[in-house]
Length: 329
Image (cartoon, rainbow, N blue to C red):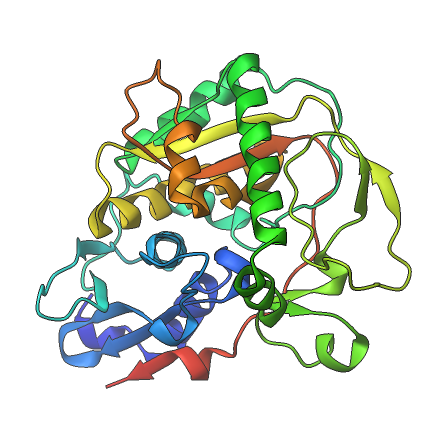
């Protein structure tokens, strides 16, 4: 295959698959550029979609872009192309997060393409999960998936899960007293048919899930005090099954690796029949983030907390049209 055989329609499809990745508040903080001459897709950050209050270091922004990068790699392999990837290729251009060169056929040994069916099935579920335990074999496979992308995934013991839940509760209280936090959350939440029907970003009210009446699952209530017609209040699980995904260091490269590891884990979990959601609530306060880490693990920095289990999948959330995020040169 030659580089010019990678046509615009194929690139558009690959990028469309990339953009269904999760991102903080569904802000979709990414841009893509396809350079025809080199058969290369650039993954770039969109700093206009950064969140100064919740994500002042842009760690979460990099996680989202890393997840999109992983989807791009999977979609490229599914289309028959080997995604030769380089992170942060130009230190003089920090918004250029990665390049993916698509000029050779995918290797028969590639483990990426089998994950492709999960890309559009993966959803964030803000619904209660059952009490059914995740088998140890599945947990081990998810931990192995994270290792393939240079990150670690651990399932903390019950005592540490309770610590995590206490920290989330603490973060919720801090947010309630912080007007900037409430305003930023409101900016990315879409309530009412007049806005949800045309939204291409943010969290629409139909994806909020039910209000938590009881239970300990760390599910952020994006509606706050705003009423959402038809939204029920239900009981969530009291013993949520949580996992910590983290890295040894805490730099942009580590965040991109963590984002790719996160998406690999989420896609594998989806294939394994699990529902998932994410929380960064306690991580958004520096003085709480250190306490999130399990002191008995070798993980240096927790980048995201996952909630996994068996339960309903969440709905599809809106995405920006590909022509808004992809430039072709």
